[in-house]
Length: 150
Length: 187
Image (cartoon, rainbow over all chains, first blue to last red; front, side, top):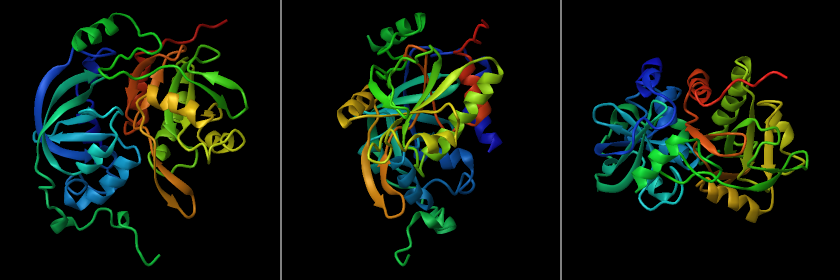
């Protein structure tokens, strides 16, 4: 957990309030993640709370208001502020549809308060769920799929 | 043009309705608190505010955001920074003037809960770009709603200073908020 929070806030001590600079256009490839479970560690380690193993929980969290992140291949996490024509911040059906998907996103990066926010202008490619880690971890957490017998 | 407007916003703190982010976030609203008093985006005492859109008995992100807000208020107060925690309900059928106060007080005695007619709430949702959608009905707790993902740090006039993802821990969130706030002046 501590490792991740330090990673999340890398550069915080050097950052002044507000935006460090105007937005920078970037293209990022990575997975759309559930940031709460990823950073809190409450549902398992970082390798278990991504991919197909965590897809159901990621849907619950995204629908329930957890900010969605884009976990880049180099480990950087971008907080998704907005996607495409969505009028809402970090919400809407688009992000639900892309939970746990590997995507290539074209957008603008804004660094603020030591956090990296991305406004995604275009999802260049959506490869669906490519991380099939349910084969290793099963469903994480198990209770994210309701028991029909209860 | 968009980049230019961002730079200009940094030159001075934004007025109500202007956003320091590349997405327009913030604006006016007029709702009713748990005491039956009218309240707008401006704090009556001019204090900075932590604003979240959720509901008092939420089992989702509110269960992280509301306690964090309460802890932030106490931590900032120790450094002389007075901040009011405010929650605008996304579930007016559950969060009414008579019912909001007690569950919010669990998180902090100073919590202000705001509700109102759907059309007045929608004004606030739209201003802060918050999607509110009923997802399903829990037989024990009632309707579960999608709602906002960020805590909004507002100044005393209700202008957005910054966003705080509720995944931060208290120290991190306080560190960020404190960079925007000044200790209250005695007397």
